[in-house]
Image (cartoon, rainbow, N blue to C red; front, side, top):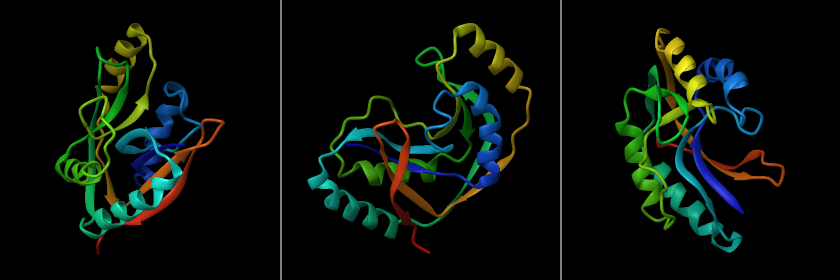
Length: 168
């Protein structure tokens, strides 16, 4: 089965992200807006208890933090993805490193914490949308006090398998 590890931001941040995702993200109906901590990976169900135990230890050793989204950016020319950039990357990077420490799956891309609001755009559409959104001032914050192990159903929809609360 295919799994991933994500943070779902506050409903206010999700509202803003979804206002763009409805139009620019074909995955809009498959999963709420998220910050991916670990790329999607295949995992044999027999190994799931070990992963859950590892993620519980990660959560117990991580304090809650605040995510700040401040501007729109893109991964062009690598990918035609538009995203809300995370201003304070360090807490996400630390959490990512703790998570992948015991997950042997190779990462396809370098870890860049972000919230995707558009993907699979043509080059022209990407330039147009990025140009418009670069003039919008984003000042969004979200408290991060949990992360989620999600899995993909046969119809492509992602569902939460388990939620991990960060240490209080």
